[in-house]
Image (cartoon, rainbow, N blue to C red):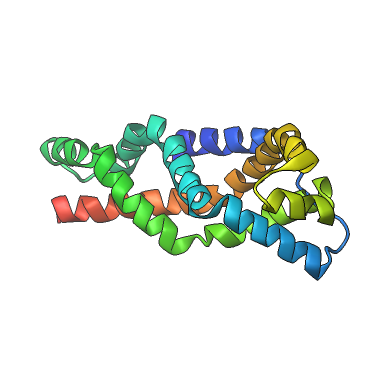
Length: 183
């Protein structure tokens, strides 16, 4: 997808911070963290990731449509205009994208792969128990202090991993919609 795809990839790569890594996490601590993620984030985060991907696409969407159409030199100008007008409907694209993205990306598993090591790095087992109990006590104050950094690191690690899938879905949806409009 040419310059726009390269620009998007560079932007996402530039935002990437070092990801979490290190020692093995105990099974009991992992279970606490997964429980915390499930109860504190759940479907809201999964939907948030999908909406974040769409927010990244939205500013470039019409340019992406133009690039897809430019890759078909045999189209007449009238067909190209009709396709561009039909494909330019971002809301229709977004509806289809949400469905495809959620079917292809195991967001909860991806979030756990990224956030479990981050929670392990920033929180002790006792703190995780307190946080899971609706963010009361000193652990709740620590969440308020650490969460912006933890969230930023997680998102910076998540975006580059999702970018290839996002771009594949975009291309396939546009091609499918194009074929439905002009076989």
